[in-house]
Length: 409
Image 1 (spheres, rainbow, N blue to C red):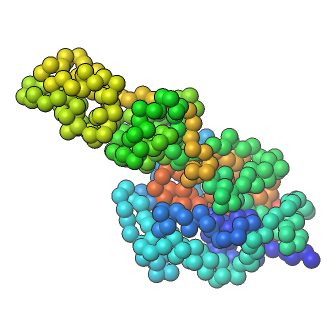
Image 2: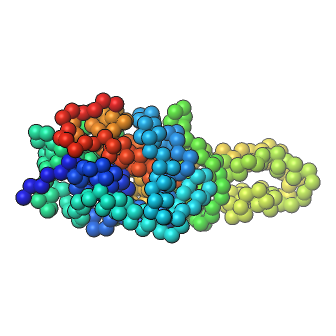
Image 3: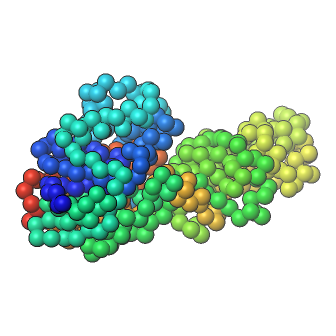
């Protein structure tokens, strides 16, 4: 049996749920389909189970894309305050952490329940789990073969996310469908992900696994340059922590990182000053400026230097030591991959989408929202805000009448 809907949304994650609820409440007949057993599992596991659902200070500059201006329109028309107002309607308590990051007081489940209720208020039909086996364009819309039968719709929304965390159901469905309808897809890669290093080169730092410290890290140049002031975490295979997750969205294979392990400190001046009024060993003095474990590991290749007292040190050696610590150049050999990546960078080329509506410029009535699009936010709630904003732009643009032509941006 064929059922007719104004819109079918494939993907019941953050963007898909929000879009479905808003469109349904505008009077559209909406079907929301997802192949996964559990609803919005990526929301559930985010923010340590409390969902960092937005960032109060969201700006277009907090996003990475081949087309950096694309996200401006949607973000301006659906702001963090708009989503906060929705939480307040549902009486969901939340709190702010550092740098504008907002979290639920209780559980990520509060967000999922809220979005499901919004869908219920919009009389959205939800099929889950339900696989989509084929999609075809027809006169005036689309026809989908699903595990629950064939359905027709005037408008089709792809909200299937990226490749990150395959164990909870991530697939390349959205990219394959985009290509099926003639869209270009910017090369995808793991983002907000730990970085790894050659095992032999990393051996001196394996013992530091678990050590965390504030750093400044940078990579790239020009418009592709990234720089962050966050905590870094040593792991057995490389580096993680907020600083590394952030910089991973800018890092390109083969490119070096530059890490300042003592930000805000003039390390050379401090060591030279200490030389004039201290007789302590260098390793002990250095441990006053950086974590002791790091000082020990850093000086381990030169034990004779570590054991000399400060007055015995040459000024040149102290200056060079400080320079290496404050401009540590190292080149990752890869990342921990999609299994540990929080998001996927790259995606559907935004130059073929309307920035106002998220509709395809190639095919009428076809929309792409959320992570499947080539818009990647920084760590700290920005990716969820893009999900809400792109979903809202799409929901407001769709109509109850069959789509007849693509909207211009």
